[in-house]
Image (tube, rainbow, N blue to C red):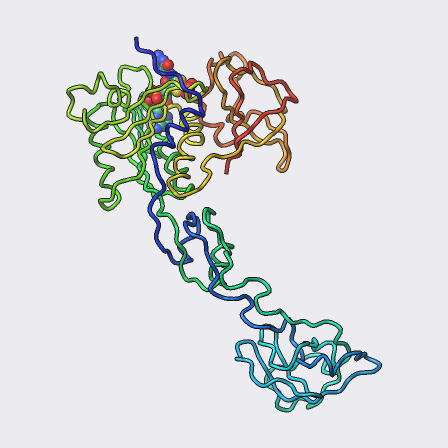
Amino acid sequence: MTREPRRTIAQHADDALALVRPTPTAPVPLDAAVGSVLAADVVSTLDAPPFDASAMDGYAVRSADVAGATTASPVVLRVVGDVAAGDPGGAGPGPGEAVRIMTGAPVPAGADVVVPVERTSTGRFAPGATGGAPTTVAIHDASRRHVRPCGEDVRRGDVVVAAGVVLTARHVSVAAAAGHATVTVHRAPRVAVLSTGSELVAAGTAPGPGRIPDSNSVLLAASARAAGADVVRRGGVGDAAGALVAALDGVLAAFDGAAPDLLVSTGGVSAGAFDVVREVLDGASRAGTPWESAVTDARLVAVGMQPGKPQGLARWRGVPWLALPGNPVSAFVSFELFVRPVLDRLRGVPEPRRALVGRVAGEGWPSPAGREQLVLVRHTAPDGTEVVPAGRAREPRPGETPTHGSGSHRVSALAHADAVAVVPADVTAVEPGDAVRVLLLD
Ligand SMILES: Nc1nc2c(c(=O)[nH]1)N[C@H]1C(S)=C(S)[C@@H](COP(=O)(O)OP(=O)(O)OC[C@H]3O[C@@H](n4cnc5c(N)ncnc54)[C@H](O)[C@@H]3O)O[C@H]1N2
Ligand code: MOO
């Protein structure tokens, strides 16, 4: 029997990350850029505001005219014009004069104060232009300026959004305000997801004897898509090397002929007689086969973790390939620990690893010696710090013999978890009240 090299989670994550580089960059319209990673700083081409602008609907006046105006002792000015938002500005008030001005309009030359309409004898503006309105106005209070100075918020040349962020609606709105119609982003990673196993049937199909629904390819494809990837999915590849080789070659052309950036498979990596991914990756089995030269950098490893121990990585005709185990919870934690950081690196995230956060165990549980344990947990209160094992759809009934092991087949817990606790290898029991570190799930 050959023993696989034993790796820690951190080592295997490093090995996986080393397979990929960020995708190429290109300018993309703002509406299409949300969710992508910004590849170049957004530098403002404009001042914001681009001119001294009124912050209020009111009258633009000269401060020297209105100093000390009060309701009891107002200053009366002659109204000589209008300036609305979008007007270019134009002639300002002379001494003893006021110009009606609207919020966002450029403050005309000569004026340096805007008096809100409520602080004047007008009280409120009727809709429409000045015609017919009073030609004088009494100013009751000009103690505040209500002018937004040019460049107060942003100066031309300022970096308004820094490279490396995952763009949201907020970021692209700032890019628009800064004068841009496009931003430069990394291309979405192209990811092909394959699930292997002759027992698998497509979701929604009645399984029949010995068969089960293919939930892993749904999980991995949806997870990759939510992480910003373009995804093709090939579910239920049969447990024969030829079928897997054909499926791998098939997905190489599935993105309109462009090569994927990453292949992710589940199943077939452990010790079974029909573990087809192992067969294709394993050097001894590969020798002399038609796919011998298609596989490079292949490693089948035992990672010191539970669940998720058997893992593979390689390149298939040069394309990075992460081979995850088939048990559903194993596939899930493998995605979070190994695939997600690889996707993040591909799409240009500068720090592809997620930080763990501190929580408190609300219940205890046993943990295997010598392996890091990944436990699906849930918070007991929405904003709380206490977590408990996420559980599953139902507990054993009286008289039922509970199964042993890590429970990596119990798919239903995935619907209850909102975090994964990462228990160090030297811990053999988590006690209620213990500090635990968790990976928060989206
Ligand atoms: N003799 C040994 N047997 C096993 C070992 C071992 O070290 N020695 N390791 C166990 C561990 S740990 C794991 S994890 C599994 C991983 O096995 P594979 O990656 O080869 O996965 P499969 O055998 O194909 O499947 C395991 C399990 O998961 C179900 N499965 C597979 N694919 C899907 C899918 N797409 N959707 C839903 N469920 C899926 C499959 O039916 C099996 O029940 O190996 C242990 N065995
Ligand atoms: O390590 Mo396996 O992934 O126990 O279930």
